[in-house]
Picture 1: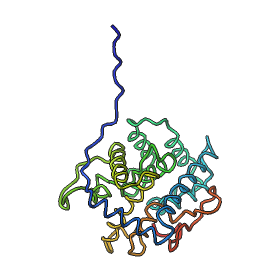
Picture 2 (picture 1 turned 90 degrees about the vertical axis):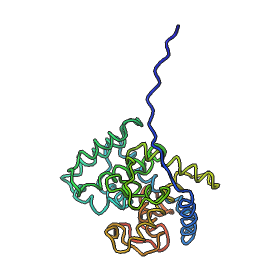
Picture 3 (picture 1 turned 180 degrees about the vertical axis):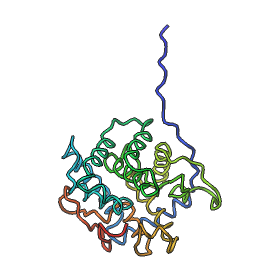
Picture 4 (picture 1 turned 30 degrees about the vertical axis):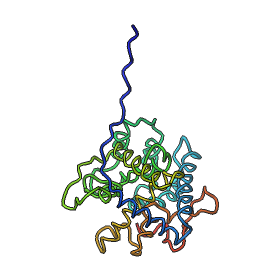
Length: 280
């Protein structure tokens, strides 16, 4: 009698309890806000273009890292990274830094090993509060180069240590004085994107869903940033109070232009945006 082979291990998915009304209100507001400049499809196209820029930049240099002048341009698209990455773009530091980035994005994809892969990348840097942005760098690179496999996993999506992020803002019920006991690993981000994709489908959005998920998340966190007034968040996302400005900044869209050569990212995608290298 033939013996059955053991099943391959699968990614354990956490249970997320999201608020439908909160998501619906955020979806309506992000669509309305996008209409102020180019419409929501303009934002979707900008997100696509942003990904193409990353993909082409690394592909054209492979198997070597891109030249530092091109990586500097990529940095303009990563709002929580670009103010802090400067020392690693210096001639003495860049080669080792760039090789670590290439190793991160070129490693074989294994859903069960994504967290270890990111941990190996962050271990290249000092382990202190001044380098917490490195997790965002890993998240931005993976998501931009391969958005289907890697959802957006920046700290503003969910940071379990700080107990802040989009996930908390869309959790069902009043949890203002509670700690959300959800890990901020790959499984959580995959599950969150799946649930948001289902929510979008239930509201008639069937195309470009990955990009709509990012826009929806950015809208949720943009509203949180706006509500904080003069808090520390303004240091990274200083802008006007209108949440759509924060949406652009969070997604790096203030560093993208829809028209022109996609191999040369340029500042200025949407009307009223800020300089690509300013602010965050």
